[in-house]
Image (cartoon, rainbow, N blue to C red; front, side, top):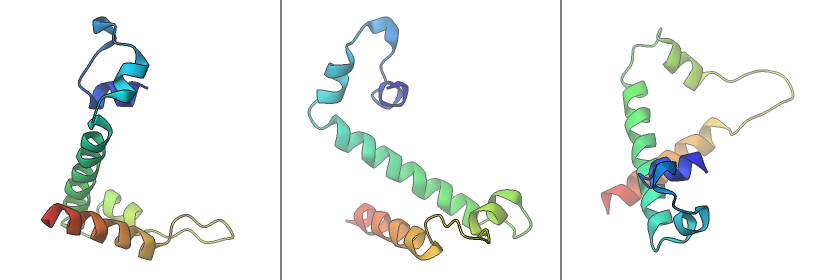
Length: 88
């Protein structure tokens, strides 16, 4: 709930109930747009880094073994989707 409060730019001092924050009209869409914009800014920042920097090495790293996180293709598809939405 802390994330939703910060994204809605409210604080606990204002004593706004959680239900009210969740039910604000259109607030969820605005928060998702902010998250996507932040993701694109971060992605662009990391892509422009030199190859030996840790954030870029971690972003492009693929661990071996049985456990698999989202594949690189899925990550790129998500970034492409957000970029297309932002361009519209």
